Length: 214
Image (cartoon, rainbow, N blue to C red):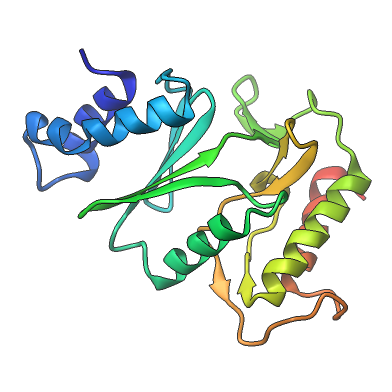
């Protein structure tokens, strides 16, 4: 019996991503232990897939309690590698919590803590909308994002996409969390926390104006 996530690897990867490997048994053999480990360790052995999307050639699989990102190794360059390792080691409450990073020949598997996005897709009107089920604490949001942006900027990184659709709420810590590192870059100058509002903070403030009309 295949778990849901194993079936996804067999079907989707066999026809979509792993174009050079058509043998289902080979795929299952290569990844079944890894997938079972992820499911057992971070998802209470529940492998129900809630959603699947592709963002800039990165597969994002949302499970019950965790999120699995699958990045082709040719995209996982030094910039990605350094920042994910940095984020994992830092464990900042306002930055997406990275449980584990698994590396195989063809793909990098990144397991992160599941949080509640502030922006969701509304099927009824086919648009991306603000999640009204969460009562937004604007002051806390500003404080949390200012904190994490100041931290990563001072350590030499720019997020470059700090918008409301890349921010979530972690109920377990009552904090807002920045995620989605696809556009991360290394800054030429390390900024100080007391410096003038930088590019990342401007992007964040403009996003608040767009979504909240403030």
